[in-house]
Image (cartoon, rainbow, N blue to C red; front, side, top):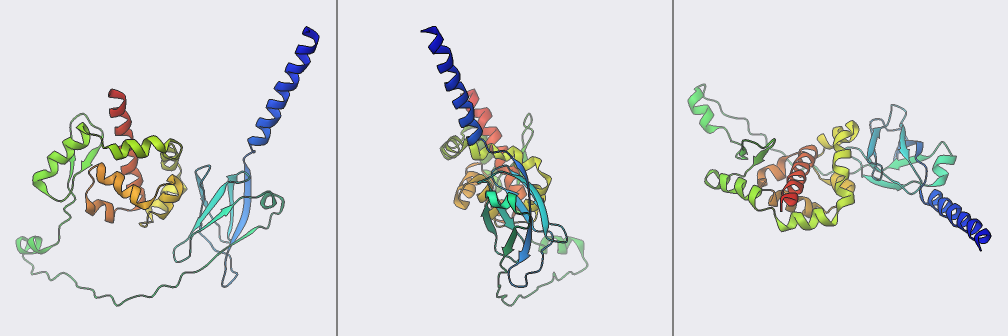
Length: 259
């Protein structure tokens, strides 16, 4: 009985290891080239992000890039004035070194823009009153490492701050609780310089939705429930939005542990 048991155990263990090896694809360096679909010219400074590994890079003057990837990862390509594109990594992309990715240029119809310069009188007291103000107030509370961006209405600003601390929103609990894998990417995104540079130049939330696997409306709801003002939500760049979501998430985790 014992003589049969040991070989059978070895077979089961070896089968388990072979299955794990098949399931865990090796991360390798993927090299490819990005071209303009209309002109077939190589494109420099295209941002390339591996949505699965949460790493980014940019193309060189020849349109070439190298990025860590494995089979079935999704690469996200974005460049100003061109349609963003997602490409699934295949075995052939590793076998053939001249894989070419083509981006399509977007056609924008520019409407008439009227520039109205400020009419300055030369009197500081009068000119200061006439300049538009940013009413996105931000408050800090002793003992907390971050400030709270509390909206455009001064009388209710303090109430909003206290509400954010004492009453964590149910929406945050639902979103953060149901998306743990995506939200673990927050720290990785903040640590990757290429991704940070990309997000700092964008205002459309497109890259954030792809990386976090959240809808744009979810991002807005998160910030609303973290008591960020409409002014901040609509004018901040994607990197500022990422930092705001990250801060809100960290505060939510602290409050959730204390319950």
